[in-house]
Image (tube, rainbow, N blue to C red; front, side, top):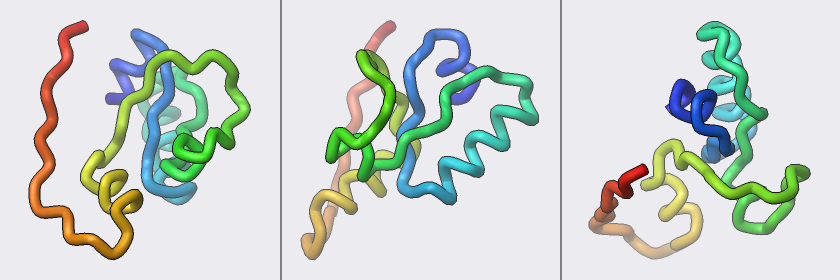
Length: 84
């Protein structure tokens, strides 16, 4: 995901700031130039600084769905692969 983000642009979106820091550190170790990852909360509430975000990479989409569906059991998640 980090390599793809570095090659194609966009932002990685993850659960929280701890994960964002982890991903940013992994990118540094890989010498991959990516913007600092956004949190799910920042994406959902439009509280991010970059304008014109056109592409995101969701890290652990199951956690994103669970963070939206608070108090509801999420039984199944289906992801379709979108072609580039």
